[in-house]
Image (cartoon, rainbow, N blue to C red; front, side, top):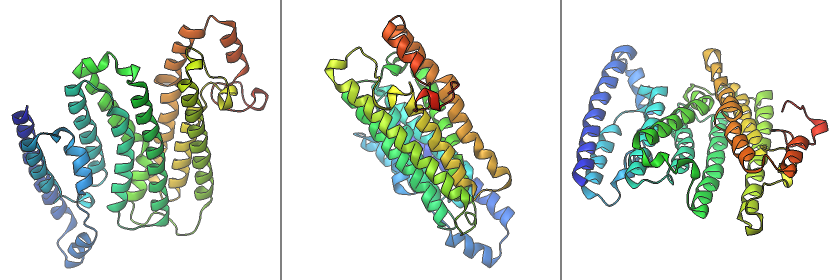
Length: 347
C-alpha cells in the first residue's frame, strides 16, 4: 500500500510539473513581457499555501512516510504555480483534488466520517485561498470570505459532531461499500461546493471588489445571510438536542422552529446563499452575475432533489399512518418557520 501511495504521489508531481509549465508558457505568451507586467505579477503572486496542499494531497499519507515524501515533493512543485495565472479553474482543481483525495482514503477505510468534514471544509479553504490570491483586500471581499468561512465552520462542526455522536451516517451504509458509487457522491460534492461558492470566488477574483462605498446590496445581503444562518443553526441545534434525548426515540420533533415548519433548517440554508449572492453582487458585473446559479441550485437541490423529497419519504414511512403526524403536517408549513396564517401555503 505504501508503494501504491508513493507511486500516486510521483504521478501527481509529474502532472503538476507539466501543468505548471504549460500554464506558465500560456500566460507569458498572452500577457506580454514588459517590466511593469512582470512586476505586477510578482507583486500579486500567491503560491498554493502549504495548508491547502496538506488538505488536498496529504489525506492519504498518514502513517505512510514514503507517500508523505512523494506528496511533499508534489506540493513543492505545485507551490510554484500561482493562482493569478490559473484563475477560477485553479479553485475547481483544488476542490476536485480535495474531494477525490477524501474519496480515496474513505474508500480504503470504508468510512463516511470525512465526507461532511471535507465538504464544508472545502468552502472555507477555497474562500480563504481565493481571498489570499486576490489582487486587493477590499472590505467586501473580506466580509464575503468571512461569511462563507463562518457558515462552513458552523455547519461542518455540527455535521461532524453529529456523525461521531451517532456513530455513523445512514446515508452511506451501503454506498461506502461500493467504491465507484462512493466516488460519484464525492464528485457530486465537488460540483456542489464549486457551484455554491461561485459568487465568493468570482468576487475575490475581481480586480477591485466593487465600489468602496456601502451599497444597498451589502446591507440587504448581510441581513438575509445573518438571518438564514441564525435560523439554520437554531433549527439544527433544536433537532439534535431532541434526538439526543432517549425519551424521544422514534418520535418526530414538533417543538421550537419545527412547530411552524417541517424543514426550517433548509429554509435557513436557502437564505444563507441568497444573502451571499446579494452581498457579493455589489462587486460583480456582466456575466459574473450569472453566479445567481448558486442560490438557485441550492433551492432546487434541497426542494426537489436530495433534501425535502428524501426526508418526506422517510417521514411518511415512519409516521405517515399516524394521526399525530398527519395533524402535524397539516398545521405546519413546509419551509417557512412562521405561523401558517402568516406565510404562503406553497412554502
